[in-house]
Length: 157
Ligand SMILES: [Fe+2]
Image 1: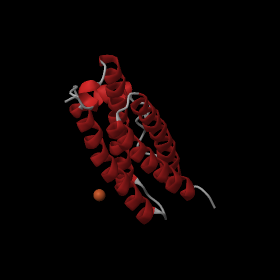
Image 2: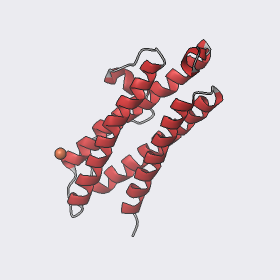
Image 3: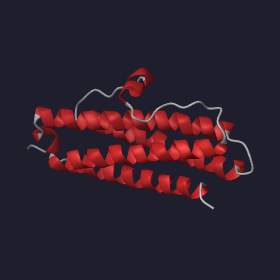
Image 4: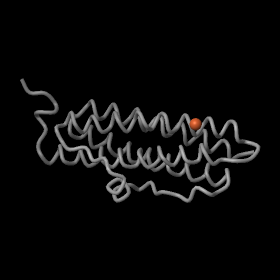
C-alpha cells in the first residue's frame, strides 16, 4: 500500500528535502550561536539572557534532529557538516564579542529568518500533500515566532 512518502514524485521529494536541509542548516547554525551567546553574555541582564539563550539552543538542538530525521524518513541523505550548513544557511555566523543588546537583535533577526524558512517549507509540504512535514514545519515556525517575540520584548522599554 502506498503512503505519502512512497507516493511522492521525485521532484516533489527533492523540493521537500531541499527545504528540510535548509531548515536543518539554519537551525544548526543558530544552535551554536545561541550557545556561544549563552557563554559570553554580560551585563545586568546576565541571568535571564543566559537562561533564554540556553532554552533556545536546547530547543534547536532537538529540532535539528527532528528535521534531519524527517529527511531520512523521506529516504534521502541528511547533511551534517558545518561547511555545508554555512553554504546553505541564510542564518549567518556572528562575531561572539558583541554586547548583550547586539546579541538579542542578532538572534531576533535569525528567528525571523528561521520562521520564514519553516513557513515556506510548510507551504511546499502542503502543496505535495506531505502532512507530516507540514505539521513539523508549522510547529517549528510557531516556536521561532515565539522566540522572536521574547527577544524583541527585551529590546523595548
Ligand atoms: Fe551552560
